[in-house]
Length: 172
Image 1 (tube, rainbow, N blue to C red):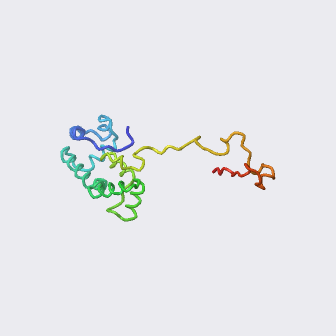
Image 2 (image 1 turned 180 degrees about the vertical axis):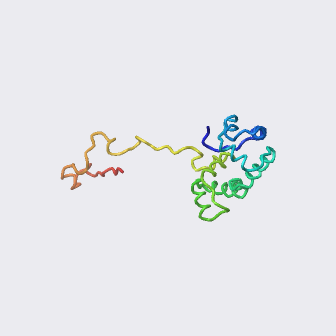
Image 3 (image 1 turned 60 degrees about the vertical axis):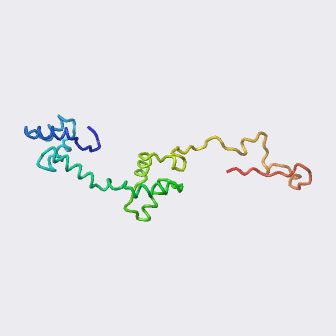
């Protein structure tokens, strides 16, 4: 069984209607359709079961859901304009939340919109992941036979001879 709820398709709703007419329990219908009995129970509870009416109702509920309205044309235009200015999806989501732009939108939704509209070239790193530079460190340990400035003789501090002018490499 799956962990996430997935609405039944129209063919499954027809099967639920016919099995319900044969007075099958929700558990038996769920076993037959390889679905959770809770899914079947909720489907039967929503309406006196008619497959086509249930399917129409579910499509209507999906259209009026809050998630359905998040990717409108105005939101898409706003996101595209901010992406072209160099903002990341995280910054855009935070900015929209602060400015109370027709409801909040998550950065994950923005990433989905970017993927759907093929706007990866507008991302700051063009959609590539950040790669940390490991082992590319320059500095003190890469200079062979290096002597620290504190360990130099006292005559070097006077800086009277040529070659005694040196600086310490700042590392860190």
